[in-house]
Length: 279
Image (cartoon, rainbow, N blue to C red):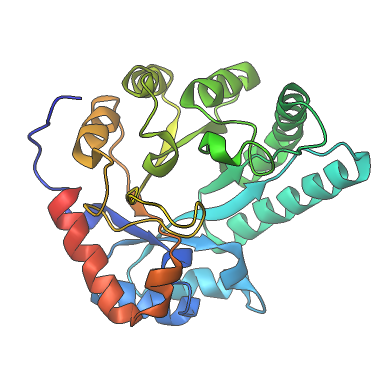
């Protein structure tokens, strides 16, 4: 990959996922994000537990934050019909939550099951999303298929490349369905620039998530790095998504046992500074 000379992303496009500052309640996260100049928030569903969702959405907007998306739906794949039905029901609940919160988008972690083939899981994912499209359309909520790194293909997602996500979104033929590009999962893919360009041609790039890949990675789920801390060419990938026409929020999503233990206000300040320097 050639180095890209690109101005830093403006702070006005910075969004942070609530899971990134997991120790904070959603109320504290909203206050702290806004005070740090962050403009957007993606809400993880666990942060809504025990709360009036519509009231929470109003609280977020009152702080000046845009509600960028709700995370997460999906997990459609299972050899058991009853589990697949429960997944559909949970995704319907997620659509209702997004509507009440005022979130225009749900990110889908599509699911997989080691007890069946990847092809069967992919068929179930397609069928599951197709079943939800009418309800998503009625709620004016879009569904973003997020491909996950192949290390998660056993039990978290059978959609592992942007090519697969694009193929699936195109096969579903709905303006409610698009894709989410997460650099942690996709940075390694030699087809990434081409497939991001394909997103632009199809007008289906709905979300852009950033963090970094640390070396060595000591926990494949919970050791993501701050921007600039690893080997992901963040500015290069950002240039590709912007060339494809994406001008939305740039979402920081970091799972980290290390960073969850530190003072979260100090962590937030590091998020802002590394975003401004490396994204």
